[in-house]
Image 1: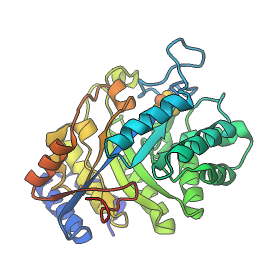
Image 2: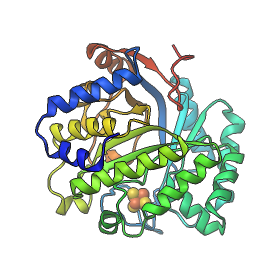
Image 3: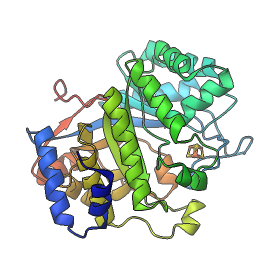
Image 4: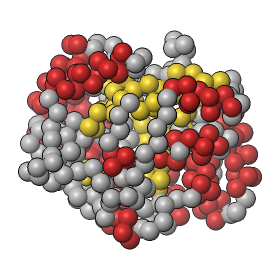
Length: 344
Ligand code: SF4
C-alpha cells in the first residue's frame, strides 16, 4: 500500500507518464474487461437557501434572499419524469443547508417520489445536509440516516468533502461540517448497510500534504467499512466565487491527470474512480481514462452547482460513448451502484 510520503513524492515528481502507466495498470487489474461506465441521471438542487457561506460556492443564496427557492414536490417529480423518459435510472438530489427544512420535510419528499417512481434510485443529501437535518431535528446522525432510508433514500453522495483537512476547511467553509463530521456521516451510513461515494475538490489553495491527508482519510474509512462505491476527484471552479479572488489559478490538465492517477493508486481499496468531464471537459476526461479513471460519471441532464461556478461543459450520451470507444474502451451504462450487467 502506498504511504503518504510516497504519494507526496509522486505529486512532486514530473514523471506524469510513469504515474499514468502505474495507475492504468491498477485500473486494468480492477477492471480487466475494458469497460468504462456512465450513468444517466439528473441533479436536482431542491433548495439554494443556505446558511454556510462557503467561499468556493456560487450556488447558494442567504436565507430570505429574493433569488432563493425551495422546489415543491410537483416540480421535483416533473424533473424525475423527464429523467425517466430519457432512460435515466437515478436522481442525485442535493441542496443548501436550509434550517427551515426538518426531517419530516425530507421524509415526505422521499415518500412522494418513491410512490410515483419506485424504481428510481435516490442518491441524495451530502454529509453537511445530513448533519444539518440531524441538528435542526434534534436527532442523532444514525437516527437521521435510518429515517431517511426508511422513507426511500438509497445512498448518500460524497459532496461536502472538499479537502478533508480542518485547516483548509476553516479557510474555505468555516461554518460547514468539519472533517470528523463528514467521516461520522459516512461511517454511520456504512454501518447501516448503506453505500456512499467519496469526493475531493482540490486546487482550492491546499498543500500537497493536505491533499494526501484527504486521500488517507478516505482510505481509512474504506478499510474499516468497505462502504464507498467510488472516488470522484474534481478541481475547484473559481468563476463567480469569493475564493476565486484569492485562488487565482485553476488546476491545469497535468495537475488534474496527476491527481486522478495518484488517487487511483492510493485508493487501491476503492473499485471505481471517476474521470470528470463536467469540470475538466470531454478531452481531458477522455485522457483520464488512461490515468486510472474507469467511469465518466453522469450524462447530467441538469446541474446548477458547478455550472454556477463556471463549468459549462455539455455532453450527450452518444458523445460520451464515442470518447470512451475512441480511448479503447467499451462504454456501458451503469446504475447508481456502478453495476453494468443489467443495462444495455
Ligand atoms: S457549498 Fe453547500 S453548504 Fe457551502 S454555501 Fe454552497 S450550498 Fe451552502
